[in-house]
Amino acid sequence: MDRKKRIVCTVTNDLNFDQRMIRICTSLTTAGYAVLLVGRKLPDSIPLAQLPFQQKRFTCFFQRGKFFYLEFNLRLFFFLLFKRAELVCAIDLDTLLAGFLASKISGKKLVYDAHEYYTEVPELVHRKREQRIWEYLADAIIPRVTYAYTVCESLAEIFKEKYGTSFTVIRNLPFRMTTEIKEITPSNPAILLYQGALNDGRGIAEVLRVLPKLENVILRLAGEGDLSAELRALTRKLKLEDRVEFLGRVRPEELKKMTPQVTIGLNLLENKGLNYYYSLANKAFDYIQAELPAIHMNFPEYQKINAEYEVAILVNDLSEKALCGAIQKLLQDANLYQRLKTNCQKAKIEYTWEKESRRLVAFYQNVFAD
Picture 1 (cartoon, helix red, strand yellow):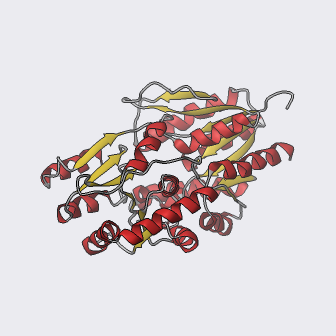
Picture 2 (picture 1 turned 180 degrees about the vertical axis):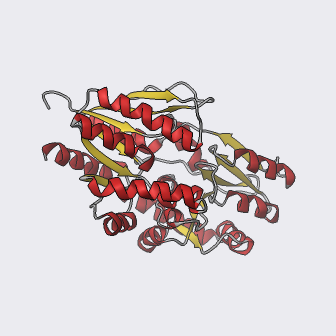
Picture 3 (picture 1 turned 90 degrees about the vertical axis):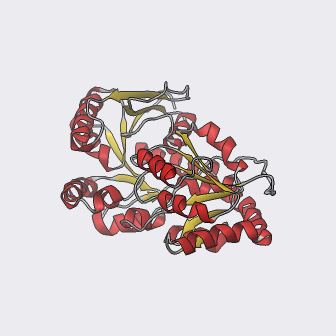
């Protein structure tokens, strides 16, 4: 393209650990667009990594709750209003208001990237007043959005029915990676890995509670979140300090090196709202790329993956019987473990960002051509 078309992508989180947005912005930059990713700076944020696209973080006075969202969207609105760009991509509902209003006033094109079913996240499901506010916002804006995409077929179908807006599906897949798998031996304790936010409904506390029932097994938690302090306290209460490793926030490049060196990947979501039930977490594909057998919930999108490739054990609930049974089955049944690992090797060829990014680039080409 003669002059690079400028895209501003907006999120409310820190930028260093957002693997999805790093992939998206890198691919758009490679395709010839000038990309700026906007997020926020937390009190414990580390310096931004050098990446192919531009990055900016707001330092907010409020860190959470309604005042944070008001402050962030107000600052984001004025920033977008006067920022020279042809297109704004609002990621999730918590940045859509600012993007929508700024695009209407300034004439910029607007893309809505629905990473999740925002009004059905666990943090809102049991807070009906706050949920109604977000639902009102979604009902008011999403039907007026022309260009949108989401991460799986289930959500695309729900959004089409609910809002009348068509959503393209662009899955949150990782880059293809090569791995060196660490073998399970008696001298090497089996390692369970959870990667992602330590938030409500992720099944982490349930795994901690069953860990004493499992011999020669340790748990690694790569991430931080709302329950960080609570989970550390539970670890102390259960006297599991020598068997649980809190790794904190781990940069994506470090996580890629770490994941193939563990034994089982965990992706355990409580059915606390439709966002989790219809989720398709990026960690599921990260485990596949690492050739790592995993344990997922028996939810629709994971059923689809397992029906095609069988890369994981699916559990119906987070009871002690279900979790212990799944973990012990993978550790004790060498044939099953090897079969899942072999299937991961096949699936990783299909589930790659190298392939999925073509859909992303084609989507933006169509938006700009319209």
